[in-house]
Image (cartoon, rainbow, N blue to C red; front, side, top):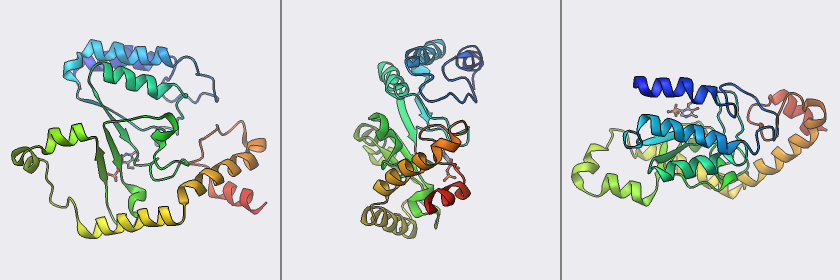
Length: 221
Ligand SMILES: Cc1ncc(COP(=O)(O)O)c(C=O)c1O
């Protein structure tokens, strides 16, 4: 990381009141403040120089960092800033994708259209190692528009038959058993049953990490 970027992050992003590191805002607490957050990103981009930035990576709902649910307006505004400066938006859906938040991809909650999407984990039901990158036509064309560049982006185990077959089977199960809709319904039910007792501890939508013990108790009722 360049010194300029490090300084910008220290002075800019970490001091951003809207999404300060490790903050756990109550639902709605930050609504209406997203423009400021997007301004912080824009300041960082300008400090670093837009021409030096290829892409921004983000999880729609940050997982390991604390299951941080963004305010409704956050990502649309961030996406607009990135588009303004022609910076690619990469959505990491490794944890949130494939139905886990009640939509096939979490980005659907905010109508986002990233340039690239990363998938893994649930793509094989955890059975075999596989990851996938979904790319817009423009990105695909810029990488695979000729043999010379296409070869540079190959990998030894890319397109592995076994992993691909397992992933396709997983997608068929998701579809056949309508698991995305089920996750949405179960999520709503879980919230309804647990909110009265757990309101101070959980935030709307933060269902990824609710313990199975709590879930089992709730579903038995
Ligand atoms: C959000 C997120 N992105 C990417 C990765 C890396 O995925 P993989 O281990 O399949 O390469 C992980 C792994 O835990 C993850 O949680």
